[in-house]
Length: 405
Ligand SMILES: [Zn+2]
Picture 1 (tube, rainbow, N blue to C red):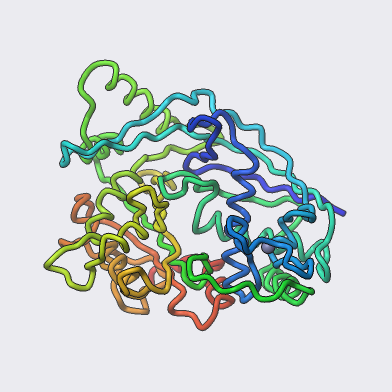
Picture 2: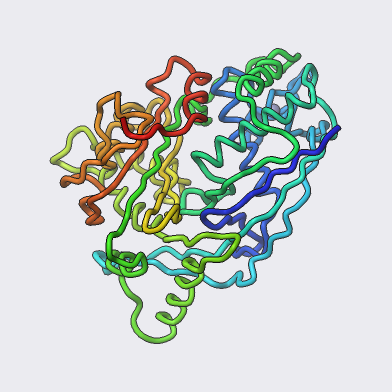
């Protein structure tokens, strides 16, 4: 049986964590965990079974059956359907950190961004066993679809909330065929699976995801200057030196990496705006608890992920904002209310015909672009609400954004 090679090229650094909160190297478990997380979201969206390995509902069930995800990724008593080798990526400067503080807020403690890994590497997938009813091609197709979705729209690794993990993925040994991949997920569902896993509204499912890509130029301004306009510049001395050195690392171009504009902290800072309690915009008033869910305050992981910007061509930058929004929040607000607020904030009109297309964002007050003093911004927005089912949604996502009409 043939191996599958996935060539991963980072657009923003990958960070998989390490033993002491710094990262010495890319840990395969971090990559696999992320791949599994996306696989679970796809399986749930397509109506299959996916247990949550972190709770009591883990596989196998009492009859010894496994859910669709464990059938591929393994669980107690069942090896993974494939083995992964590589990459051997080291972070040469595990202690290095970029500290970003917003200057409008003196008390702001700031974000400390570890470097992570930038570059290119191969991951080799070798088949070990086949889940019941699946061919080798089925297994690879289901993984190719997962890789393609996370590379096109999301990210890889555990810290995609904070700018990390935007990657490109190329395949050697197989090509994604969306129809075949969807059939593979059907076959997986038709196995002798465990009983339907009790539906848990806290488990991400593809139909509840939104994805946005944003493109902008900075005109005459250098990206470093733009960033320094947004944040608090460190006081001269060691801190400033460290800051400048880190910034150089982000912008350093080379053969296997493009420059990165580390703006995720700035976007996250402003994201609290539309999500926080405010009197003049009823529609986007969220309770404290709901806010903690969405933007991850008080130790919670944020549901909304924001990437750093990566350069796509001369003076054109792109970043992503995406996430899974639960059907309802603790304060009773529903998914569509949250998505509407996010769209307002991104200046992307409510009109349906602007979905799936690159279009000019509104930049009036109330939008993120007004805060960032950006004028020429293009947005492409996708959310599951416009589709009858996850299959259609996936199909549209994998065709990417259409150019402006
Ligand atoms: Zn399972």
